[in-house]
Length: 194
Image (cartoon, rainbow, N blue to C red):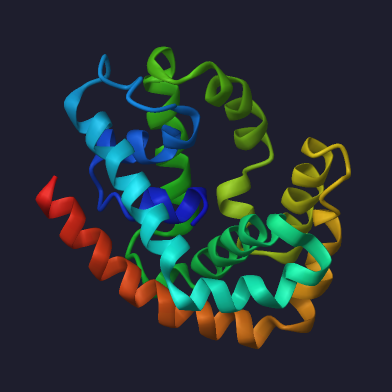
């Protein structure tokens, strides 16, 4: 899963959502200096990733892309799934998406000093381009995929994945919807056990 899903699957806990958001920038156990709930968020993120990577449904989505994008297909599926979460946000939250993401950006700014340097560098771009909110529309998705392609020095060709999303939109959305129901249950159980 990508950024928006990890934040959402923190179930409103601010520190856990920070940890869940920054986890990809933390290696091994180099998080033990952080507050306990941020540590729990990092562990929750890792559990969500393990569950997602081993689940059959995201594998089906990824297989549809594999011929064109090889190992980048999993990353693309994560972004597609965030698109469907953002697009259908009202089905998952009573807080409007724009308010939700603005609150999260404020939370990150308020805790800027504890964010890993890579997250600090990314945050201004993420916020100015409003990635989390713009996942909901196709132009926003195209921009994010273009940015990811640039980060790979154009090796991934992820910029072309917007076409695959459009061509197989119904299949990807159905897969996301079925999978996300299971992921919410798993994540809530994991959250409660941390």
